[in-house]
Amino acid sequence: MRNISFILKQFSRSVLLAIGFALLGSAVYAQTDAAKGEALFKANCTACHKVDQKLVGPALGPVVTAETDDKWLYKWVQNNQALMATKDAKAMKVFNDNGQQAMTVFASLSDADVGNILTYVRAEWKKDQTPVASVAGGTAAESGPSNLVIFGLIAVIIIAFLVILILNKVIGTLERLLLNRKDIPAEEVEPSEDKSAARKAEFKKLLKNKRLVGFFVVCAVLCGGTWQWVTLWNTNVHQGYQPVQPIKFPHDLHAGVMKIQCQYCHAGAYKSKNATIPSLNVCMNCHKAVDRRLGAKEPSTEIAKIYTALGYDPQTSKYDSTKATPIQWVRVHNLPDLAFFPHSQHVKVAGIKCQTCHGPVETMSEVYQYSPLTMKWCIQCHKRTEVNYKGNAYYDNMIVVHDKIKRGEKVTAASLGGIECGKCHY
Image 1: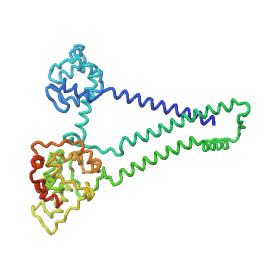
Image 2: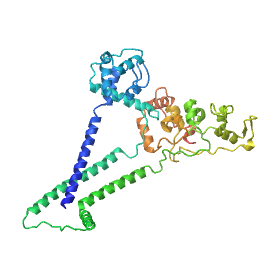
Image 3: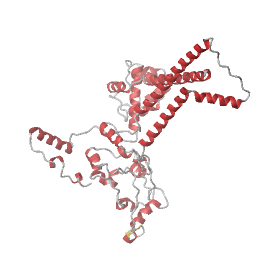
Image 4: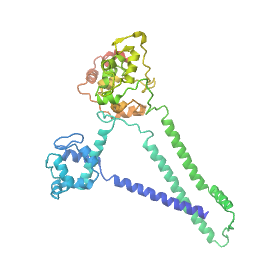
């Protein structure tokens, strides 16, 4: 019994020490405040700098992110003139690279103020570099189970461990009281020469220790419950799904290098529920003349598949409809039938970019499902996205209808868009 108590005591000290270091690290990390940094940045820096682009001075996002020596940045912001007076090589390079323009001295800013500004700039630059384009208030991110659930499970484990620790202390005290009583002799255990028998005896003692067994059972239940929760949460979520397509269409070449707008091919996104897959005739607008990559000596095998599907002969520039076969594209993004997602309402009315849901397609060699497309993900986006109703015909009509209601005038379903085709036919 005493051996088990000693083991639990040592284990508890190690866990408590690790928790203490974790809390200390989180406290150190929380010293800077991006919200305070935003206010200081707008008050002191916006006249000359932007986070993502050059103004009078350089864009601060890439500069601050690339520089890892925050102490040097403190000195530069607070008094760059004094830093250059010491002939600091890094300071002189910054001065010369920016046309030898003198930067304002901010001696009134403390180290904490500069740290807050740096935290804000780095956070904003990280947002700008996020593949999913931000939309008037931010996009939603699917993060799986709620953080509250995860932290709750951790808290339960810590509380259970603390309870065991307290019980261990109580039992240790009771053991000492029993041993101090003269009328109860201490249990004597004869040393065994058989090591395997000794190990078996120790193992049996561990199994008889209800506290230890109970602790491991609780941990096993929590771990199993967490695994089951995560598994059920991700059921039927196809994030990252990338099927093999009959033609390897490189979006990074067309949307990235060539800068072709998404709606040149997916024209339906602007006017209907579906974005639509472009017909091969749209491809032929360019590929009737272009049959290979720049600098390639041989025609592209993927472009040749387009010619084969259309029955097109590049030598005679003629089509043979008897040889045409449709391309069997594999659907990547698929919502359940119970979900109605109109592309036109999001793209035309709300002005949302395609990358908000589909991710950085301009960098994908082959398209895959970037977002989880779960109900939670959509609701988070609706909660965070600010509606820009100024100059929008849809919301202008809603205001007109609202004014009619206030005046007590007749309002029909037609005035609320009830005769639009998409209300019934989708």
